[in-house]
Length: 203
Image 1 (cartoon, rainbow, N blue to C red):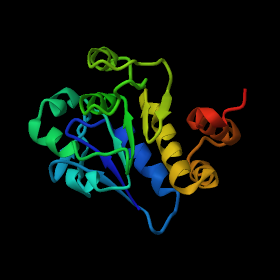
Image 2: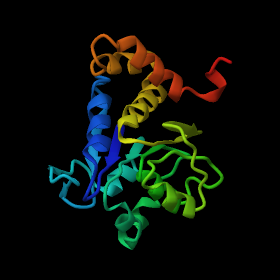
Image 3: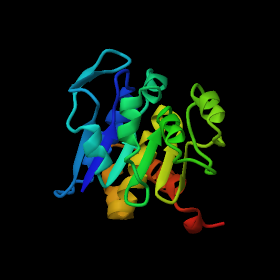
Image 4: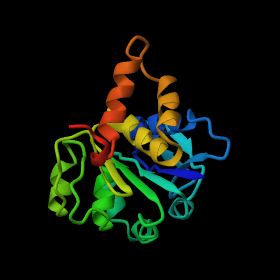
């Protein structure tokens, strides 16, 4: 099982690295969670340099993908080389999620046509201009595609992916490692509630 987190130059550390940490807490020996980038290294919006663990081509073959956000997302969607590779993303065989401005990438790839999506307030005008209906929620999913809005909603994407790939108990176990002491039940209940399939939400 390979889960790739697309991480570009100017990336937001909270979006890529929180998801990376929680997904690895699932403690699945057959899982590989990687930072996938178009270059060998990428520098964050705050100057943190990390090495890529996978390529964009690897991500297109992964079982699940998170498209992280950052300060240069509009440059990413204008890069024909990057976007040509990312057209290999396919929700018919992959779980695909996007965080904040990563939603703009999915919009430009046509993966949000007719589907409401979440993003951060700064990115919202560009996502709307791309023809996507933006909802004021931290998370929403439609089939195999999910989006989250706000940096601290990144754990919702991790929760959704773990639940879909390994079950709810695996998500609970992973979240138990990272939620604030004294607030475990509150955080986990909210994460499960916000990422549940609409069919599973009780009225």
